Image (cartoon, rainbow, N blue to C red):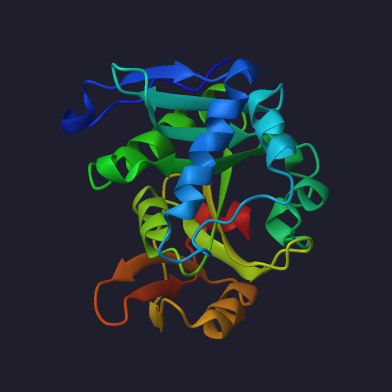
Length: 240
């Protein structure tokens, strides 16, 4: 099946959405390269070790990729979802307790890129919600997302859609520091205990809290921006 239709923000209602196939692989890779070159901080999103292999996996049987085009045909955004077969091997992360024996339920809310001209319109959020719907329809409703601790905009969008930080550390293959965020869609977000506020780039304190079972579930604007960590309530117990 394809990714569910994206409910487009009003400012982007003229865009045309279409599922990408292997025939689009060169356009997808070219678009990614343009985005990489325009990043103010290269660590926000880095190329995969093998970009072609990554694209093939997202356009093949284990992934889906939807894209938004201007009426002229210009690609302006895409988002992918991936259904991994083996978490540690495919994603390059150490075993995380809540993921053990859950491979058949996991969807990766994967790469999403938007052309600078269309940023600030809520497209990232719309594309996250479309992939949530796809995850539910496919029966793989334990959703994970990866982001760089330096990528404040990405983390903000993910947290605003109900994902919470459950792990932070170095990936096994690339040795990049990444946060894993999670949301189990069938569960209603429960209450949290007392909140501990941590500066968004204090990686070590966040790592300590996640190892102790805390989840980063909200943000407080400021300089620096802070992430609220707390222990999840009963509704989240399946993830502990």
